[in-house]
Each structure stands twice: as C-alpha cells, then as structure tokens.
Length: 87
Image (cartoon, rainbow, N blue to C red; front, side, top):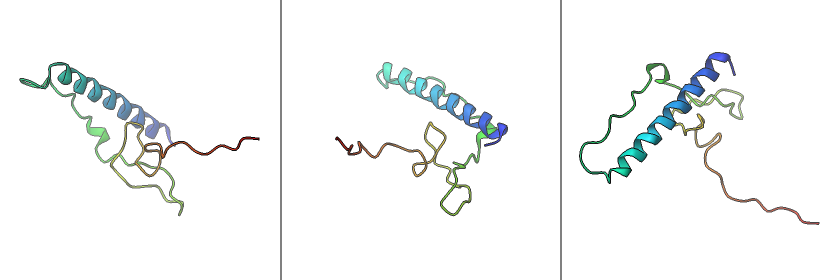
C-alpha cells in the first residue's frame, strides 16, 4: 500500500467516525426535528476502492466499503467463531 492510499484510508476512517457521532447525536434527540448537520464528504474519497488483492492478483474494485476501508469480501464482518482443537 502506498503512502497516499494509507492517508486516504485514514481519512476514510475519520469520516466514518464523524458519521457515527452524527448518527448518535440524532438518536439522542429521539430522531425528532431537524437532524444535526452531517459531516461533509471529502472529495478525495470519491471513487475510493477496496484495493485488496483478489485471488487473480488484481486489486479489488468494489466501492461499498465498511469503516475499515475494505469491502465485505476482504475484511468485512466476522463469519462467527471457529472450532478450536483441544488436546
């Protein structure tokens, strides 16, 4: 990952945290009245892709990203606990 991509991912995470705070503030109001001002979406994040390597070795081009900066195929939600071997 290049330095530029790393900076974009950090900016993406900051934007997601700001959006989360916005949602919490609106929920605290009881979703009544005018919603608080939403944080502006940074223009440099438009078109941000997942960027993880696919099995074919090419970068993933999905744009539906989680707060982690990855798509649901490359670092999304957990699939649940795994069985562990006990001696």
